[in-house]
Length: 333
Image (cartoon, rainbow, N blue to C red; front, side):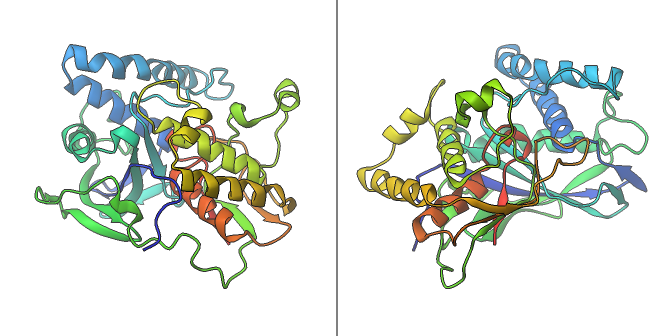
């Protein structure tokens, strides 16, 4: 069985909500409002001492939300990149923005690192989702809004490429206990090398993490087209975020690798250095989306085997700024 080239604890939940109102529309920045609503509900359900880190982390997102509601055409506040005190990604599948009764809304929750804990999901996340479905709180419950107008219908947990049921038609299987390593079971990681993969198509907009930009790009606030090397470095920062403790850097991420993993990483870096972006159609996302650019980019040659494994991992983990809101994932074609 082929496994991930870097050991990362991860739990992936596919969330399916069934709409129980005649008509609802999704917020303009659905992932951001999803983060705010669930985060606020979680903080309200915790004791004062336990709620403190959540309220502190959520405060900038709350300020951003209030500011954009007051200034819908010219918001000047920047959205905070990570408004939860845990490492999580809320990935809204691209698709429609309006739903009718009985229609299903799908999105994916990813818990990473030391927060890849099924107990955390059962104790905090699932009850918050259920409350969001029936809430009468006037902050969220408004005409044709999602909040208060859905029920948790199904939830699945990833085991490799398969989704195993945790909740079926509202019924929770308490006997099911996923592990933070099962997400990689059976994944091939670059087994399809008979095909020539040389194109990345961003499924959600990417936004460069300033930590991977050189000083000249930072000075001029210049948007660069992400190279294979940029993506690898962004992946390393993402891995650093999953490590225990705070203020981890790419040096800590490299130090966490085994000797074999480090040698493989160096091979991937060398392979990435030999590729350039030959063509792209990257463009700004829709007005209300997060991120900087979306589209496809074609490289000068097919991705070599080792590099392809890391690209597939980067797509699963999300890379760059705003990964919490689902930005920075792509398809390899």
